[in-house]
Length: 494
Image (cartoon, rainbow, N blue to C red; front, side):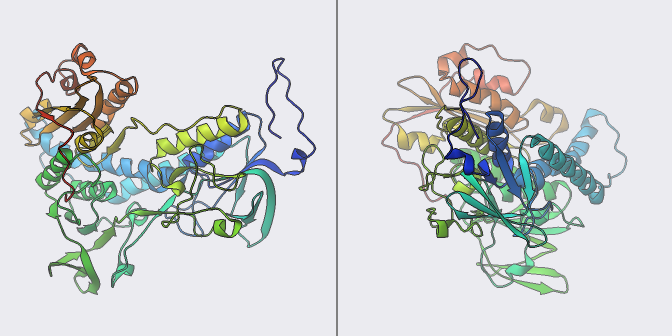
């Protein structure tokens, strides 16, 4: 059992009451958060088990894989495809740098797909090896009591195990909207494993998954129609940066359909006909629904045990990731708090500290950076301008910089990078930063450290830049673009 370390290095002996459990911790779900929580708990001396469905690139109720969504059918394979999609436009740009590309380069989708699959299989193996101090069960886990988990094995055999603590870390799953012909669509899972590269794609959705796949397929030469319900994509991000992303997507040749949704789909001799709510018919080889994700809690038997869920199926937890049942905890996307892999890792780390290291630790959700890997990418940390205005007690100073990246001055590509700092005028603290342009995520990671440390605009201004670089713009924005009083409210119809 888990024991606290004494000063002389010996462990406390567990009470007789604690001894009857099979495990100190049983984790259901071996994604990034679950694996982190299991590993760290074991390092603190806990006896830990974890269960996960068998590996498959496409998730279902009977398939999954150690590593979870991010590693197998999310961040990692998507980023590999983004890298692949970038090379097409860059080869075109290379001509103006003196590279003689005499013929149009051919792109072999199957080669990239094979390399992607090799990589996720490799990572799946690494994640399994990380669990060397944890008992791994392959099968479907269900909670059948406050201290009991049932594992349904591949052959249908059901075995139950007792645990002092149970951690739910099953993540989320892509969802489809209910319209006629929805069975003709794919989700991001299938999009990462298509046998053939589509020539024509219709995408429904305006979130990060939608704009990322629009960039991927367009970069590989496909015709892309992107339909979204608002005036701009990426609802929830800074409105000014959303407009920049929209311009860039359109400039790259993506057909934008704002204020548009799909009403029905039908199979035709020429592909899939997607009808919009404006009566327009769009033809496609593939229709992608990037219409959100839902917490993966349906088959866990949680409500029968008394665990509270919200209306979306997310597991309700307190600030320490504990449910209303004291022995059951939950982290990651299944809680629908901030659905990012590094956040799930943080929650898993702090869970282990709280429960098994005797160090109660709450996850801190302030100044968490994130990125949208469209082409070029968007990355942000802290508050958007709209959020800052909504929360401010005093004036907000906004600094912006829009410029043609140095590499574009030779290549001739007409695509500006845009940077933005949001500053609390009274305290001079930088409370938000955004960038859309090449290398934005790499730059924003450093900016996130500054915001986490409470950096002021004066400190940004006193920092020497790296020249020539795009990043130096963040420390050379001297002139305020606008000052916004707190009474001003952000637009809500975008």
